[in-house]
Image (cartoon, rainbow, N blue to C red; front, top):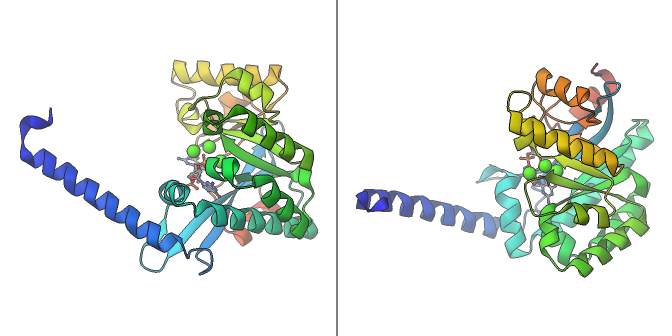
Length: 279
Ligand code: C2E
Ligand code: CA
Ligand code: CA
Ligand code: CA
């Protein structure tokens, strides 16, 4: 199909060079992002659909570089995973999130869970249980409030290693949740063996609610399966009232998305938490 002309090739080459160059720039600047204090966390509320109250919050990392500007985590996390910088970055995220959550508890915000994304690389080779234990110890955050979001990609790795890591995390008393559920490689038996507490329905399925019959069938099946296994279900990327209504009617417990709030800086999040509720 591309034989149609050198133009097409040149277009692709230029684009690929741009992308490669951009990855190179990201790589070289990422090394010092932590020490230069360029990372920050945003916070996105999770809503209990049974009563409209806030229940949890997810920490989402942001990187602002003086020249590159805001670089999306969807861009820089994969680069950090290949360079290994995800390990110090992931440690920074864990510590910062736990410290902020402990401060909120001390201020009286009744947050029942704080979710932190854990990269597959961090999970597989980062001594993640030591990092988590240290973040809990230094912040004083009760372990049961910390929920680690892992993706199905961890299942591609040696099962024994993954299960041992999970066991050590469970012993620490933290919770586990499977992010982007339905987009990756997990089987139902993996979910069962992993002792997870919650499943996050990927936003690509939520987007199709309530109009797309296929999306409805998938989300319904995930909710029913989670119920049978006594797992919590969180729907992510909820943008419309129609999606929210469908999810509530079909037994989804928790929702997260722009309908309720975008990810916010800490002080905006505090205001939201203090003042808003959905019914
Ligand atoms: P994710 O963990 O699946 O996070 C959900 C993404 O959807 C976030 O994008 C969030 O801002 C966005 N989002 C939330 N509500 C809505 C909505 O209603 N509609 C739409 N269209 N989007 C919504 P973000 O913050 O850009 O993060 C993208 C991905 O980068 C994350 O996907 C996660 O895989 C990764 N990431 C973000 N923060 C971290 C982190 O602290 N550590 C690690 N390892 N990965 C992170
Ligand atoms: Ca997540
Ligand atoms: Ca997700
Ligand atoms: Ca995702």
